[in-house]
Amino acid sequence: MSSQSAPAPTTEEKGPINLLRPLLLMYYSLSYLPITIFHLLLSFQFSTFLSIDEFKDVWFARFWAFFGPMARDVSAPAVMPLLQKNARGVCLDIGPGSGQWLYLFQRANNPEITKIYGIEPNPGMHKALRENAVKAGLSDKYEIIGCGAEELQTKGGLDKESIDTIITVQCLCSIPTPEIIIKELYPMLKPGGQWLVYEHIKTKYQSDFVGYWQSGINVIWPHLFGGCSITRPTDEWLLQAGEWEEVKLRPVEGQGKYDTVPHVVGTLTKKRK
Image (cartoon, rainbow, N blue to C red; front, side, top):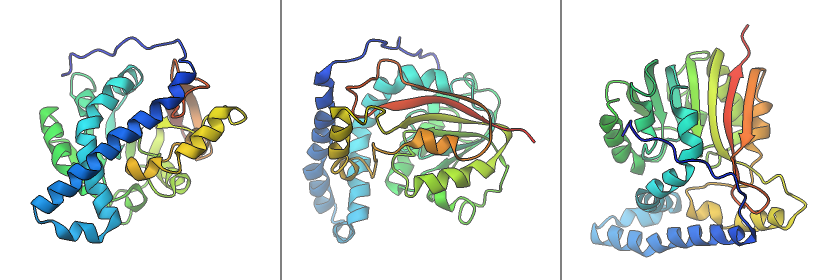
């Protein structure tokens, strides 16, 4: 898979019809609700129904097994140039899910990687994550830590200034207390270390219809997409996390005022002492 190349980015912004895209994505997720219920009943996993959070995790894991590859293809023009050859040393891969981007961390793409900690709190994703790590030839470098990003120092056993590269690809939208966690992750980065970012952000067109539309969609969206919120000003929180030597964040090409789920992509380099 290392021979894949990123599709050419689309620079032309889509029209108002693009406002309907979130409705289609939510329909895809909802279509996996009866499938998940049937599977749990058939396998006698009745206890899962006793916890809403556990049920949602199982539901999202099943849905994402189908939708994840599609989402990867759409995001590839922005994510592939970001991740290829930019990760180095000890890496912190926050919320990797099923590991759909792990092939970009193969030695041919990132020869300077020595270790990757995959921080994935959803156990329903671990099996696919391990399989994708093996497929990418990372079985000796990739270690799954089954806790949330907010527990890295207490349960993960990771120290401050021990990480060369932090990787967040569409995960800061779904972790709890993201503003606090971003500030907690910053000290773990070594001086001169890089933070690679591809994240949902709050639309910059708050005074336009899309601002109200995004807020309305976000009432339902998190329940269908593993807790993902599309109205977080994640780019602003990253800038405020600490002192940066260099910031290269930009909107994703082709996204504009009709995008309900806009993204920011780029890198932040921590200030050296």
